Length: 148
Image (cartoon, rainbow, N blue to C red; front, side):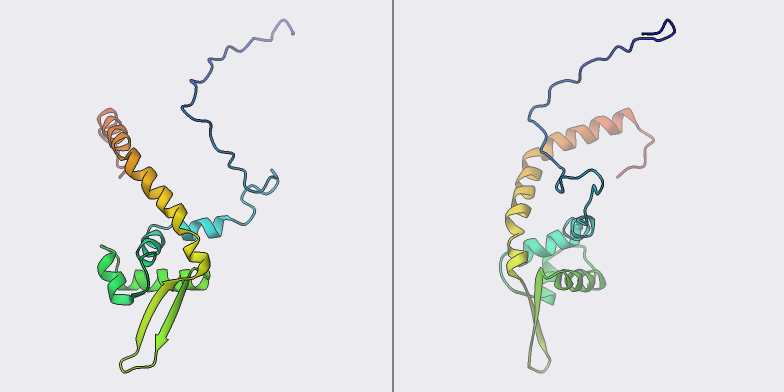
């Protein structure tokens, strides 16, 4: 070590309750998102998740979806089901009648997401009190913040 070099003292991080998951889905550092970003953007979107949750119970007509998903506008629901259809997660079926009847159902690929959404739902319910407590503590420590 040179005479002008100063040693660095570090404090070890507290141990984690559980080991973090290996979150490198591609296995290469040169392409960190390796094309998954657009898929995660879709299935991570709040409206998409709620549509998937609702369709996990079986086929639904547009108005049934709209009534079941509180706060979603007609325009946003239309965009969401179209995007999910484009991604091959939802099948839109038009029945020849007057007026035309349309229903939406999960495809096999869409159905394969339901166990992941269920796991996320379970995690959310389990950790909801801890998250609420953390938010309250943050709000008390930062009374002028505008994060919601």
